[in-house]
Length: 325
Image (cartoon, rainbow, N blue to C red; front, side, top):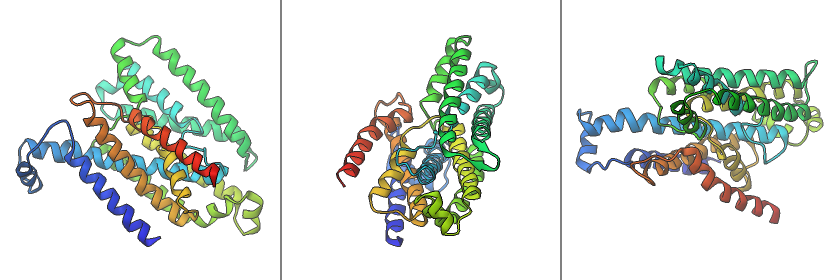
């Protein structure tokens, strides 16, 4: 495990370096050295105020989605589970669209992520309440409730979009495809405030997640308080996904492909799976964002499009490999 963590940490540092050096604006090496020394200038502005916040946001967003996906796959014992399963993306989209339609995002830059986070959390609460039977969480009802609530919220989004202006439609379209262009240090601080305790607690639940991946009855025999662990793990994994969506929009396949791929590499223990998924997810999204900024420069492709274009064939390959094994 230690060797894998070291190797993937190096991969993450390489991805961060690529994210900082690559972009639509070419900067000579001498200017980069001056910027690293803290000397004011165009390179300093691009490095410290544009690219670095974007790269850090990419690391956090990718890592949060990957960890969330790993936890959902363990709880549902389904390698096809992903972070948006419980209506998180639809709830966040409804909150964001409402904020844009009312013009709140124009008056306060933090209005859109706050509204998206609120919408995602409301969706999660509704799904949990529908799936709750006393103090027990019915996994089958949870999945159905997630699908139904997601469809209803998506219909609400479409209804609102029929009444908004064309410029708002463009903003909504770009947000729903995912983008890290609005990253700021304030947003990063709020993401870290959600991500750090949630990932730490989920890592602490690793032994129980290992047991739950074998089945609830087996986990109960091994001493796991299944209902308590399920409630806590579902809530924290959903919170990670909600926080990621509120800042970066809907970015698909990171939370599905990354933990699935790490498992196929032979990592089953969640004490290794969770940190490794975070490292791979962060590196993958940073590299995808670097591609989104440079492939069609000076235009920028939504990073969600890049993750889908790369993630679909990769996932099909992983799925084919899992069938053969």
